Length: 362
Image (cartoon, rainbow, N blue to C red; front, top):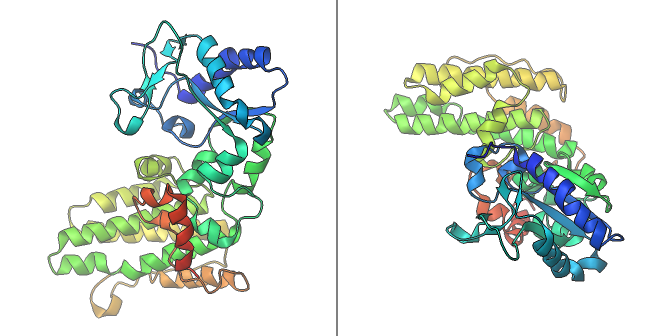
């Protein structure tokens, strides 16, 4: 069995050692950007040996100028005819055989013309058409920010650029993270959404609805995790890597442990106490950022005189929302973005639907 190597390292060496010399030989005057960004566990650095079964291996993207777009087929054929059949023990030939939806995987191939996993596309087509849907990254509107896929934003700003004649790295600096007003809006929204359900963890359990109590606790936990990403100024990935990415955030282990205990609790006392503790620790995280004045939060042990614990999370939401006064987001409902709703990938991956989502805020 071949020794596993991180896909990003494999692809970088594949480009530098195999593809770059061919480009220098056959197209010495070509200006382009080469990178591994956009999508894939290898781009995010979460890949392991199990990742090698599909859409993983020696691969990269080659971005061209619009005027060179007509050369895509020619350049791809040059790679197919001249690249080695293996790189560091991994096949450079990819097929869709045996994989769902045409997903490509490495396939051992020793003779003939390769099918390398090299995506060649005009840079403007990729940024403005395929991935983000907006070409002018320096002037994204508030509504566009709220309807962009957070996972896609993470992907296009992750990975590595190997060669950058077209200045992609500089353009991506505009979307390294949400603008501050968008960040504040999303923080306020998550606290508001928590406030709507924070009393229900205990209330559901009181009427014998254990599954309802656990589900609501899980939703609040996810909101708190999303807040942690926002406070750390990190994009959150979609569900498969959400917990993994959260575990790597530079926050206290106390908060991580409280959330884990809350969502795995088998009794209501532990579930309620730990989710409340997680909320308090997230307020501490909020106060450490200094984005608002210090918020002093205490536990209300008898919410609505029902023996339910609450921190009245709406107060935090209101404090943050006040910072939006005078901005275009001042009157937006505190509903967050579609990225805060688990498994809305079909919406994120279909740009026309994403654009229609703007109507919810208007």
